[in-house]
Image 1 (cartoon, rainbow, N blue to C red):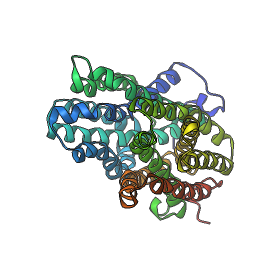
Image 2: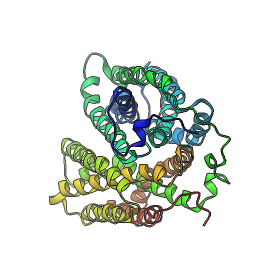
Image 3: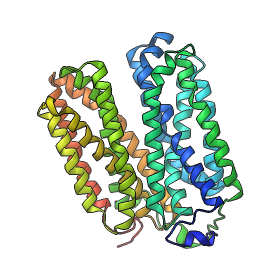
Image 4: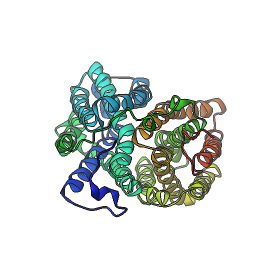
Length: 404
């Protein structure tokens, strides 16, 4: 049985002291789940020069976390069952802090191993936070998921913006990478009080476990592919949109601004969509909405309508925020309880991020094969069609473990 406080049984969230501490803990942990990663791209030139590494190895730095997500995500729910969500997340913050320090030492081996530790730690947060929200705030999943996703995206945008200025100071690129240790330590202490608020779960109740492994349910695969395809779009645009815009005549400074606009355009949707999704029993109208936004944005790029580039960036950003927010909500909405949500989240993020890791490589391959940006841009439209199909299936009102 779940032993929860009475206030959480109300649809209205009661902001008492324990609630504030828990929500602040969620915010601080969320803020560590992207900032150590998005801080790398803007200073990759400094890192290459400092360590004298190739472009291939530099690119691998951004691939390692995705591979870690894929490998570690399935194990996060199992550890949460054994030790509890609260202890497992606290342990993840310790691993993250160690990884950030190791990565910033200034050696190729330490850079790669530290990045791997960071990916492992973030994988736990990615998987367990949505499930923990369902466990502790079962009637306010939409609001808390909004807080979680917005905190994650704001910190990611800030990290991308301040990384280069920090690296340009006396602390250099090592200091810029190590800076996020401070945020992780704050998150650690912000989360520490939750060890006294841990919810005890007895697993001998049949309703806590599905009758077969979660990956054997067809709906799990629809949710997984939805997660993977929206992530593929994000990581592919992050990797290639700046270079594409430069090929269309923009300066490096202008492309940086365009990418920032796309990033910040995600924020309204990452907040609104989980709230709207929680109020609907069926979310297919939201799937139609973000699919249309994606098609408009990518069609503008495909047709080379450069005079309206800022508009296409806004449309893609809005669509990306909406699809990400809805993907996070599927883990909770399609689960009967928190542990099912963790199992769905673990499976979807494991395979989903592995799929996402192929996106930048596939886009580059198509570009080189046809020697054309336009040919590569067709990939975006194809992926959006696939995303619409699987998200449409995922958005129907039912549970993954329904036997019907």
